[in-house]
Image (cartoon, rainbow, N blue to C red; front, side, top):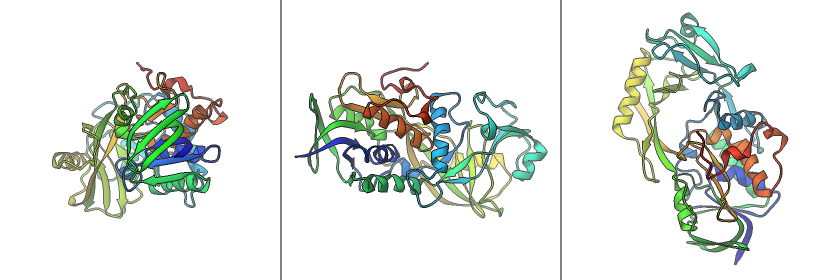
Length: 369
């Protein structure tokens, strides 16, 4: 029977980045039930790195710690992982303040713009927007390059990645875990649950109490519009209240209505009502004529009941490690989150890059206010 030190269930960005951290230290095997890693969340993300996202939470600290790692192209990407864009947080209908930015400084601290200043950045805004906050450090994340570099790092460092391998059951003992899959049995010292929307189902199959994870569907629509020069416009949002959009091509944009629809784990598909809502909110924000829907898709964002990320060993089932609940910040926090999880699995103290982070904040069965 095959035996590894660490078996990671789930090949999305959570499992892939953790595998890249561990593979040079212990034997690692990532198993993915789908034929492609990252199909339902990672591969459908309109990901961006944004310092202000998440409010004054431990997740924001993971984002800030991740930024230098992205800048360094960790874990060895051949291409830059961040593309500078900037973000405009519109104000007016909901007031002029930008809440929860007291712990942001330097390039990450938003600055206020007048209406005249935002007109130069985003021509054609509707009259209800009286001003904005500009976040210069916001950047697109090259998700495919990042995910692929993590998977390649796992293999380069001696680990394994296998697709079409579904966990059927798992049983823990003093020696570790015996896992039954549709491709045979595996023994592991540590079993990592990085299964995203399927995290609770993996726990059930392993005889572990679930956390109450909830997959939420989110929609993105690519629109062709009657305006040119849009590729490099800033990311635009009403402070993440009801929409965001960003340039994709010269005359196309990605629009999200910030929907959060509870769904069962599965292959998410966009609902026509959510597509229509995205278009309506976009048209209420700017006067750019919509010419066509070029693409539409939906992905899954999975949250714990307190909406906090859950990293750490289960307090009851020895050797069962949770790496779930990343919600909408999983990709932008992955470099630091994987470093944190690797330290916990290896039984090491937190590295210097994570000096501002308390791992107790992410305990799997802890509850935040």
